[in-house]
Image (cartoon, rainbow, N blue to C red; front, side, top):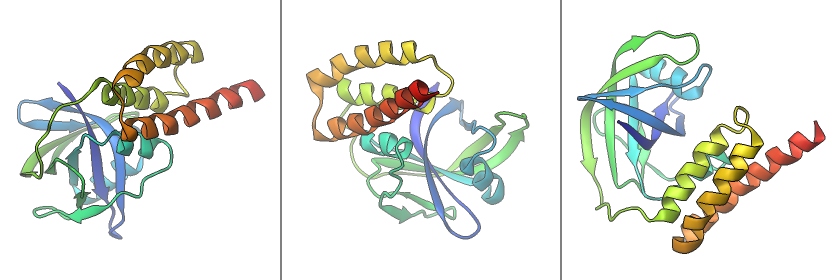
Length: 188
């Protein structure tokens, strides 16, 4: 199973990095698969820790992909690091083993601490649309523009029917990224 979460990691200087990722859950292991090179990968290899943040605020996913990474943080309890202050829950992880790969190593982690901060009341279709659009934006350089356009057209149906202010704001950020990509393709 893959869970779409926000991963927070910390470097030796205490700087926290925030990144949306699909985390694989296999039994009681959490597998993080960051691409090389990436800040998330460097930080986990350096600290041997990571934090999974479970949130229903899709602006954080869209924000990370559109240069908005300044989200309020709180200190973790069992590992050195931070979690999103707005997280519904967070899980503190320790790295237990690495499966090496030139492109995308598998980082196997175990949970050492889990905290529920607020109830999860469910996703609406607009939140799902924003998450899927965020995944498309993260793959702008590898997907054909026609596929992106088709997917966005379909996802906008759910967004238009069920969105609130947060979802519309997040969607707008992602659409700016897609429009910028279109312009870059036209200039090339």
